Image (cartoon, rainbow, N blue to C red; front, top):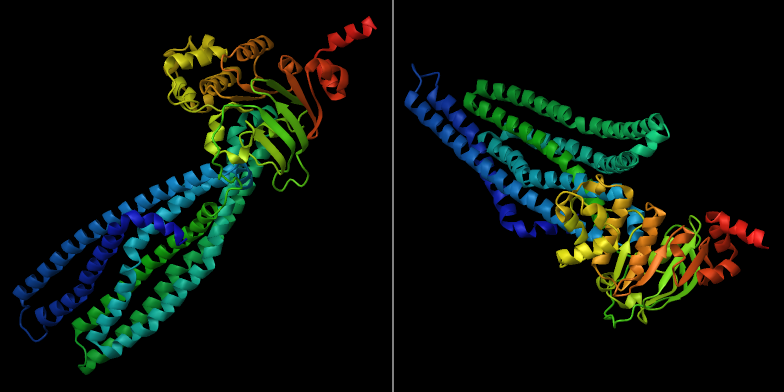
Length: 582
């Protein structure tokens, strides 16, 4: 939590001025009871036939001036506190976002998207509120409480003993409740994580849920998580709610004792009526400030719980070491040397002893059943995951020898699930190469077989794509993501089942277009379609994470049982012809 406060470093002035002006306001507020006592004792005296109106007017003017100056100090303090809190939130969000971007896929898998979204939004907002209130009240409340006690001693030492007794009791109540609620607020945020995860799944998978008629069961699941969150919030709320009644009880008991002692002393002539009123006002000020302090403690407690969760992300070390210094020498051949991959907490390897060699400019097909490890193979090339054993070598060097940014600039990736962002077609394509000209964008669209539908859109390159590409079909989104990768003119092109939504004719045209690219990238085509890898120079066949074949499509048809099953399952007529020929 202390490390997070470094994000206030750029707001030192605001962090000093906000409490300073609050202390000025508190100082003026402590003078008010003395002026009221003077009005009662000297302006309105029982002995005089009429009140001393000039004196009363002067004192009322002083009260008005104190109120105006105090208000100005409060507004200025609020301005500086808000500026520091918002700036702190901005800096923290930026740093947290950069940290999340630096994490490898392994950490993403461990944390989960919903958890990171909660850290970026709810947790940071809780911290922002805590910083704001702390700058305004953290010093003001103790100054008022102890200042009121000191001022009470200047009025009457005997009566002020009540303050000495009541303040430790109030502190015990306030900090005891804080001690109980801090760990509970952490649990509240964890329940909120789970609820957000369920909400995210339901919103993103709404069509699937409705298609299978699972609305009722998903509603029950959501309600269950929501109820658990509500129960935990009620538990924390009940404990926090004890703060006000307990403080009111103690303060009012102290006020009763104070008035009783004051009445005896007034009757004995040791105290004036104005001094009793001043003592009562000081006790009331303590009550008000302790209520504010209780609210501050609740907010700070939530902020501390959120701060620990954010610190957990900030202190998380990426499993990906980015210490490489090598510069690409021009070659784009890819070698897998006895590579094994075991995902974190997976237990058994997802890939086992994979060996392959893709020459510069060669096209490699990767095929296999669902869950055979096809995507895992290509995810090792850009170092989305690290090989557990063995080495992935590009251009004669281990991928770990390249800086991650340099390595990934060599590679154009089309992910399994097409992801587009809100913005124009041009904006989305320039993610591949921000310096690309419109002519290069059009060329990439044509190579990706996307120009036919993009050219028909209003604005063409300026056509606005909605969030997640909602205004495009699945095939259109896939072709745009392929164009985005081609804009980079990569040395290595990875197509991870990126034509699954395309018809066979478009898929074939796309593969022909890629094979004719002038810069001849080393291409990896991941697919479950045998037709998609027929034009590849060689094909890697996977089964349960192991390589069961790596050869040309024609030779695999003769020698690899797994490939033969996939092929004839998709081309049954050829098997019939083969049987009839025999």
